[in-house]
Amino acid sequence: MKTVGIIGGSGFIGSYNTQKFLNEGYQVKVSTTDLSKKEKYENNAQ
Image (cartoon, rainbow, N blue to C red; front, side):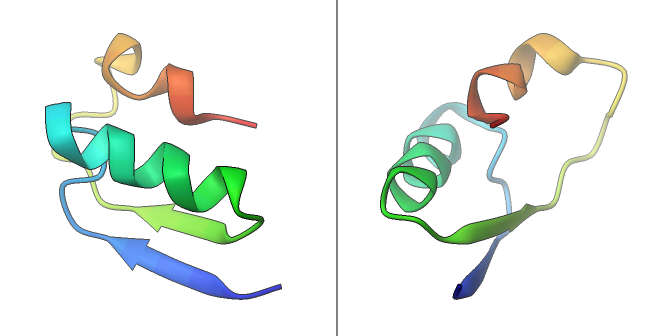
């Protein structure tokens, strides 16, 4: 499994890129500034 890191992956555009890589079978590591705002990135969790 390949791994990709996405800076800003929980933002509006970054979340689409994150989901694209997840759908293609990548392991994704995402940087975020505020873990307490789970609604921003919970759609990317698998």
